[in-house]
Image (cartoon, rainbow, N blue to C red; front, side):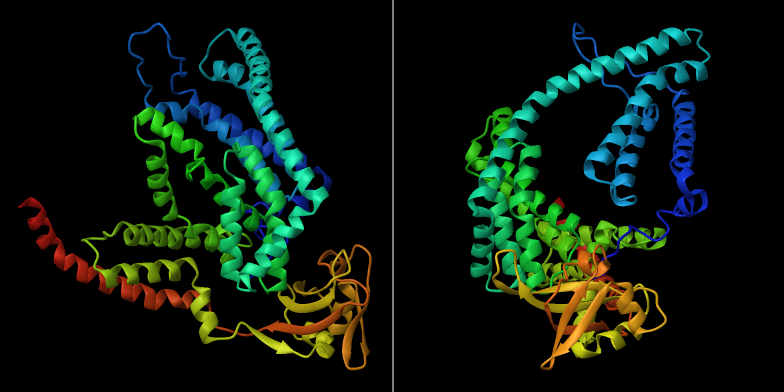
Amino acid sequence: MKITDHLGNAGYGMGWIKPTFGSAAPYVIFALLTTVYVGLLKFGSNYPEPKMDDPNAPVAALPLPGPTIKSGLHFILPVVVLVWALMVDRLSPGLSAFWASAFMIFILVTQRPIMAFFRKQNDLSTQAKRGFNELIEGLISGARNMIGIGIATATAGIIVGAVSQTGVGSALADVVEVLGGGNLLAILFLTAVLSLILGMGLPTTANYIVVSALLAPVIVTLGQENGLIVPLIAVHLFVFYFGIMADVTPPVGLASFAAAAISGGDPIKTGFVAFFYSLRTAALPFLFIFNTDLLLIGVDWIHGIFIFITATIAMLLFAAATQGWFFARNKIWETAVLLLLAFTFFRPGFWMDQAFLPYNSVPPAQLAEALGNTAPGAELRMTIAGVNAVGSKREWVVVLPVPEGADGTARLAAVGLTVAQNDGKTIIDDAAFDSTAKKIGLDWNQQILEVLKPADTPSKYLAYIPALLILALLIMVQRRRVPTATAAATA
């Protein structure tokens, strides 16, 4: 599974800005973003301004969705800024939220006078004052709404602090490790169950803080020890998904109680039905772990569009299998085939890995040769033996990116790694400060047990060819039953 330091080499088509403009790149990006913002305002000015509902009106008339969306497309830009800062520039969450909030403030202050200008209204000063007033009102409303979130977050902080001080977090890892028995799927399943338990009754923000602080390190640590290397964002999405599922999970199931209050149904029964429906999508977080392409990590535009199409097909097939209906009512074997096809479209690399080994084992003493014979940008996997923070022996897997270099020795020096041979063992003699080797967790006196070099294998997407043929055959079989099924339903 490929892990990259940047989301796409081209940065969604704008990777040329930083190399070209250097330190002036932020100003260029802001100018481009402002140009898009003004263009969207020009487009939105052709539609009437949405108005607040009259609380005294007997029947509130819902606004038309089309004009409402078109007049407010510029509000998507702060979200674009947030995602860009997080996933392309790789800024910290706090700094990313700051820039997104700053651009949102800029929009609130300027949107009214610019809209008035495009609509050829003469009250620009009045609209500018209105924008400042809306900013103040928004800050006041945000402060009030943050009271509940602040209390929930503070409570979650107490829980996290108590766990870190008492060592419950490491105990959770030990429990999952013992019960999982080294099986990756069992480890993920147990972590999902713990996420459901810890997420019960917690608001969304507190839920994320608790499960990400307690359970995300469990998957990262145990995954490294069992050869599963995934980006941290995939791990956080996994535990957060199941933590949120606790909102519909009996006996707490706050969302189920709220739904039952509206429908007048039984809360516990509503919770069980909602949990059953939620289980149909419980496979998706596991796919985030085993196929990070679904998270658009390390892909370009063309690859991203291709993944979007195949993932959509996979989701439709998965829904058809779980609902028992495709073009006609499924037979048992057809449901099994649909699930198999959905899995293939979600994770095509699984079948190719069974037919062709993705890595070749190299003796640790030949690490420099393996680096020299591997294309720059690829990754070597190394099994390391050492001790953890408390001195206990452990084994884990690290991913070593292959840098540019004339030969293996130069590339080994480029990653800041020095190795030595001692009684037939390959020992890490030094990992330079702030080097690539240091950042991936290598240190002095650790032993390299195994080196895995990427093998030349066919494209994993070749698995789509037999999958599409089987899908076409299944569609033909089901379409033959469509007239019969329609006649039976009519009768």
